[in-house]
Amino acid sequence: MRTLTPALIALLALTACKPPPADADMARELPEAAPTYASEPLPSPKTEGAVWAVSAKDKNRIVYGVPGDPALMALSCLSDERLPRFQITRMSPADEGAGAMLAFVGNGHIGRLEVDATEVRGQTIWQGETLAADAALEPLAGPRQLTATIPGAGMVTLNPSALPMEFLQNCRGR
Image 1 (spheres, one colour):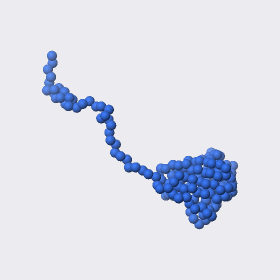
Image 2 (tube, one colour):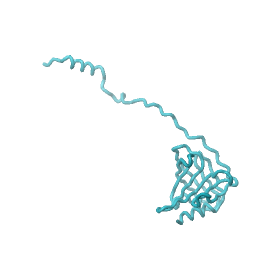
Image 3 (tube, helix red, strand yellow):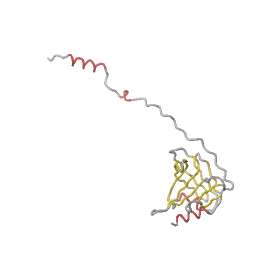
Image 4 (cartoon, helix red, strand yellow):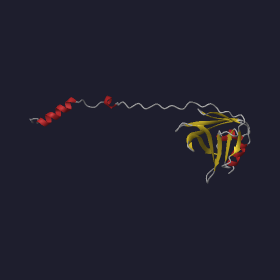
């Protein structure tokens, strides 16, 4: 029979003091993350007297708003070697990193497009892109009034105009 050395006795005594690991030991408290909240919803803007106009800076862009006030929305036709794309911009503050669905309702159609909070000239606003042929743009393909809504950014009433319809048709024809 072997005798135990003092070092082995000390090692056995040390291991006897600590129980083996268990599942309960693996549950650790994580520091509580600070809650994040969306900004307060914005009221719908007043659109009495608002009109569509070709942008003075870019002929491939139309803007919507009350003359003399900042634009509320913009539509851009983006073309390159690929199929033409349509960009929708809602000039309304957006929370950084946010995403939402913009709903167009009017002219006998309903269309929904993904929009994201995008930084443009130092401001975070709503912007999204889709193919110009996307059926979600059909509400723009008529001359009657329609609405554009983004949750939290209010509903924009788009007054009757043939300009968005013509602009969309021209973009699709490229």
